[in-house]
Length: 310
Image 1 (cartoon, one colour):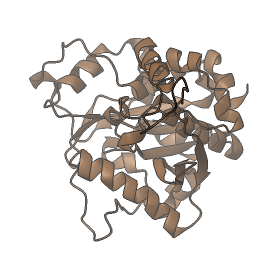
Image 2 (cartoon, one colour):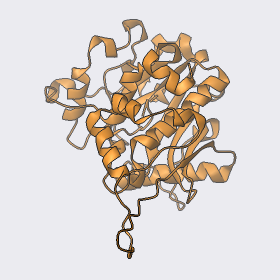
Image 3 (cartoon, helix red, strand yellow):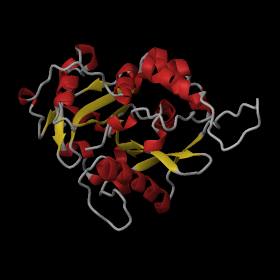
Image 4 (cartoon, one colour):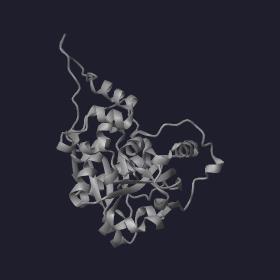
């Protein structure tokens, strides 16, 4: 499953790339997310690399001697899909990332879209390159009243959520998060989070739930090691634990490797998110999924003001 929390999709896809490093949105909430915050959330190496490439000059065919031309720094639009055409833009990006890039086993269709039954019930967050207006990042959000209408969460298919049933009226489920391969920078991740923060605040929702997906190209050893490296403070209390319907066979994997969490998962944990489960195996996406929960009231105070103006 590529549903976070990925609040969490596919987290390996957020590795920073050398090809293109972009600056985040100029919207009020996002402007507050400084380079210092990126360093705290994603790590010094991730933030330093971004800064170096942000200052790199743009390649052009000809410039006059002694004239320095700097690369234009992209800005982003944060919006929510308002019609079927815009939803298809999100679904097309999802298909490119999950099926074409990551090899997920998705239903084929002539339009090259990732579609499932939950899409019609979800709100779809879109991050656009302001110059090209191309959708370069997306999340989908299932609010409580729509989850009640469809009768379940996507996460119900992967986990026994019995211990979380009493939270359903207060939570939104996040999923299908992804970023275009040419735009994987901390700026785009923070644009997505800014959109989610505004959504939660506007609607008065308290909890974000979803699956943090870890690719299993190595057979699952990385995922097992990452799970084993989590400490008690990063795990949810026992009363909020969920149980995988198809558990990753931890006892058959090398779970003692020294690993570092992908930037997005690392950022979520620093925000105050908790892991609610052992990893479940999603054979369609070939990922190990960790059920992840973030309570708005438990966001680390040092970061809350950046996201909510608190």
